[in-house]
Length: 179
Image 1: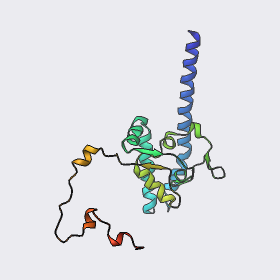
Image 2 (image 1 turned 90 degrees about the horizontal axis):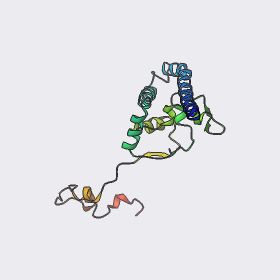
Image 3 (image 1 turned 120 degrees about the horizontal axis):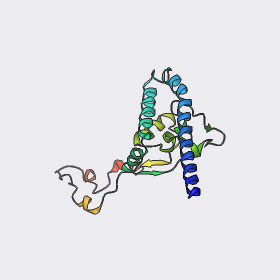
Image 4 (image 1 turned 30 degrees about the vertical axis):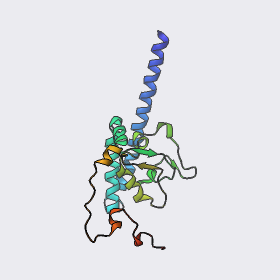
């Protein structure tokens, strides 16, 4: 009985320690956020305002992990991180991102904002604002349609004189510019 109580106390203390580390991490990054937000690259340009809004939105969504999990499932998240560092450089560089190894130095104790990235497709758009040259390993896939859903989809009416390529019946010559 005493062993079970010690184990449960150890589990609760480790969970509390993790939460305190996450709070300390967020508070430690706050001055960098405010410095970057009130700079010319922050509120002074459209790209910066989009990144600020994205950071705020992700922070609020990840305060409630069940909501973040639901949104990721709703948008059909697939794939994994390619360690390109783009999500670690949104508005400012994360102090835990190691540019040489391309790894997070606090990966096991990373905050929920990092743990749940990306939450929605808007997060990948924010990432693309920072780094367009590298493809992201994450993707949000549309829900696959069942055969029953495909059967009830209305098809556009055929019109006299309209090219058949418009309806997907034959390929148009402009679709294959090499021919």
